[in-house]
Image (cartoon, rainbow, N blue to C red; front, side, top):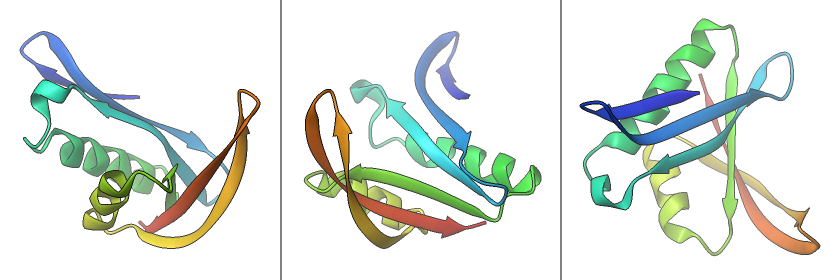
Length: 104
């Protein structure tokens, strides 16, 4: 878990989870709307990728809903590339996801 702070206030976070010996997933990222567009998300992704690389992972993956074009564009700006799509069942609903990855 990686936190972004403004003074003593948490304004964002990123979390990762191991998915294989060589791969880690950026499993969550959030920045307060009031701090959007200020580079907080970019800094969180960078911190997460540096840590994953230091831990010996060679690949980071992330998934986002296919309808969330702004998130997809953000990840692509962070050197992630679309590698496929899948559907996951969440709370008895099918959610269509785009899968992206980045070599570390």
